[in-house]
Image 1 (cartoon, rainbow, N blue to C red):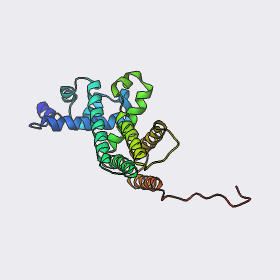
Image 2: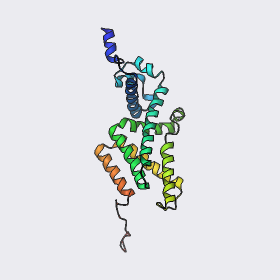
Image 3: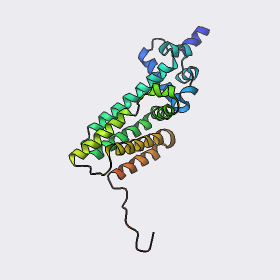
Image 4: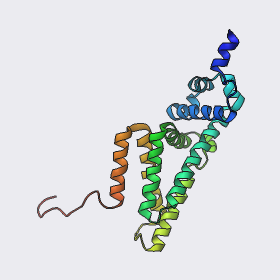
Length: 216
């Protein structure tokens, strides 16, 4: 009886290794995103993945290795978003694409988006995690700098600000959207935020006028 119970909770008989591994990574992504690195335990991962703790250890002997696997998953999704944005021919199209990609990620799997945001925040506070996380902001930062530079070269963008300053500003907006769609808003409100931001980028959101004389 005990062996039968173990088989039901543990690794499914005949299950493909890759499927089980993905199941563990998905469960861990949600827990790391909700509770952070230090508060997440292998036992919690096992319960969420509906596996035994020995099954988790079979695939990931340490929590660091599991965390790195989740980081790799998130980085891959970032890279896909960047590659999709590169197919756009205008700066507005590129910026809209990368924002929409992350918003869609938040709709489809909030755990990955939440993990990415939490990882960036935790890495700023914990030297150990900083070495694990590495430069997770590197790919989006490099893409934004490249897109802005190309837009200036094409004559599409005219600005008195430096590329570095604009890059960091847009990166802040990007992470703000990521935080909102993954941890704050629901699907409807997140879609509204993204649509409004797109309207702002295309100068269709509002018109600013000088106040009438005598009014401030």
